[in-house]
Length: 157
Image (tube, rainbow, N blue to C red; front, top):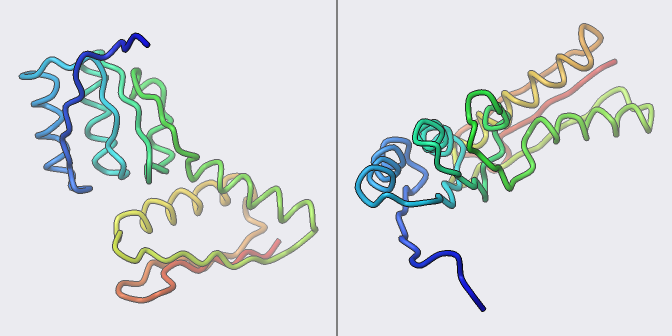
């Protein structure tokens, strides 16, 4: 089997934006990599993807990268997200509500060990359900800290 990659270079950002920016810059400027696989968290992925676009190097985000922001093809020209984003999740929730003629839902989300993910997911779902449902809805959306359930959203059509 022929491998197109001669070397894999691990660089862990620990889901930290500053660390991701520094490690991405090192990979691009110093080590001159041909491709980046990661980061696995939203905010670090935004920074790494912006840098990869600037250097015209492909970046394949995966793991917990669900932010709709990463789907912006004009901003992140070399980005290839491998995760279902929260835009798709919002559309799935909307479609389910319409299919079953439901008028309310509660979205429960635990961010145990990942405070950043809840905010990104909550905001993306809020924006997308507002856009597709409009003024016919009422929402309650919160991200609590240090609690097992951190996201509740209720809609009325």
